[in-house]
Image (tube, rainbow, N blue to C red):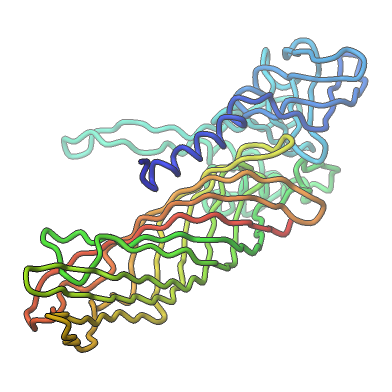
Length: 406
């Protein structure tokens, strides 16, 4: 039979197949033709690397058509990105700011247009020999170019440039600052998209957890494995950066789970029979932290996530008792602690989900697998009062309904 991990992998493959091999995702957008007419339609929402090369447009009149940079002036998505073919030859570039000083992006290069001149900002490494060793360091020529370009209006240009990194957010803010200084009209293309977005949500579900005895020798009163199926409830916080990427985000969660496990072991010997009853109760706060990769939504969307998980056991109790029956006489064994549970565990986890967006929230169904470190401390006292090593691990698979406010 398939184990729990194999079942999870199979579910993930089934869920992902329909999304990964499905049709392209088209979003509302427009093209600007060579006559400067704006034509509304839908555009294939692809990666920037593909958008630099071409545009896949779906209009009401002409169906689906691929446009190259020499065929249109540009294309864009409603309240989102815009790509222009009027900046460099034979390529579209992403337009970030348009004004007296404009900012564009093409692959790993930023382009600045001032008057009619275009300047390239590149962050590249150079090799240099220092004390007989070859070291790589970043060249900062782009800082000098940028300082020169803004110094005609911003008096503290050198300090402004020296304090920023080579990425879209600080460069956008600096170019906007320059245009405001000049008192000119300008447009920040993705102004309606926040740099940082925080979404909150709740989750309800069922979790099936399993405790397995991994000792090299067996304990007479412990079963090889225990399982428990329990409801769970949790809250989620997702942090994303829509201006930079809509696919990658970070997510933190807290889930409350109350689990109960039990077993009855019967050991038959020549002259007597032993019965052992074991009970394990855990009240746990589970804290999954993950990186999340989201595929664009068509009718439904899909995402993977994975990371580390920390379990804090708010309450734990393990006990066992038994009895020996000899010739019809019952000799009870006193109740004892089965093993001592660690206050916390750390492990890894991964999962996949299908989601759909509605007006005010996004709903998803998620399948997850958790593999945690050992549950118990290093030793326990057996019923014969001898200290012996014990190693048990715990894994968990869960199915959750998640509602995120958007």
